[in-house]
Image (cartoon, rainbow, N blue to C red):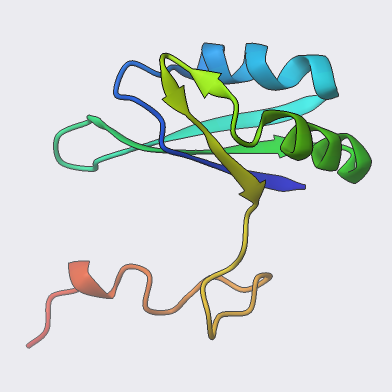
Length: 100
């Protein structure tokens, strides 16, 4: 299960998120989203948990909780509208292609 975390402060770290979610179950990965050009945190992250039931428990326990004096938004990650969750988007890197 992939979990979305929003409203993170710029000082949030992957280690903090791992420590926040670990008591609720096995965490496979933590991805703190950063700006590609500046490297600064964008205020969102994704946590992947092995077990869906543990993920649901983490969501219900942590949504509205605090981290670094900010109220967290925690819910199950959703795919973008109009995209198949199992297939990579053909438009995902379209902005980087050079057109002749």
